[in-house]
Image 1 (cartoon, rainbow, N blue to C red):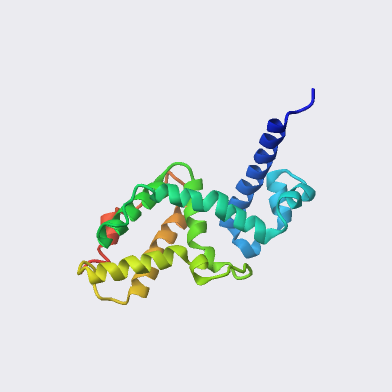
Image 2: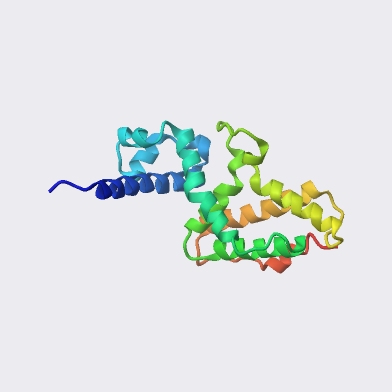
Length: 198
């Protein structure tokens, strides 16, 4: 009996998802520049022809991972946070949510956070603007400046504070990825916030 249009669409979506999941893991473990498409096809158990049927090349595959797996996950993680409140509460709430995801049993949480925070490190991937390359940094920088204006944060250089905070989060995600759930210990968000306060 021939397959219906809906069945073909479901098969197509499953294949794409398997490719994206395989690419996600490889991009996290090796970085964009070190991953080759042979590895992706091997891990996804698909042919090169099938991969190229859905994606023109590695850059398109990477952007699909970011746009279909990573960005929606980050938006979902942060959706309950009010960005209208004082900056110190926004950053604290963001930290709590991100740390909760990093500490979770499912390691894919850490993969997505880590990949999102490393978009700007991909040397051979062209992205059209600095904002696309460093979305979290720019948002965090704005919040730190606002927190300084509100009188809650110290007057250290805001770039250095943002870099320090993002580096700490990336380091925690990296550690969680590489040592596993059982051995991972994560600091409380209140401890991390102390580096920002006056």
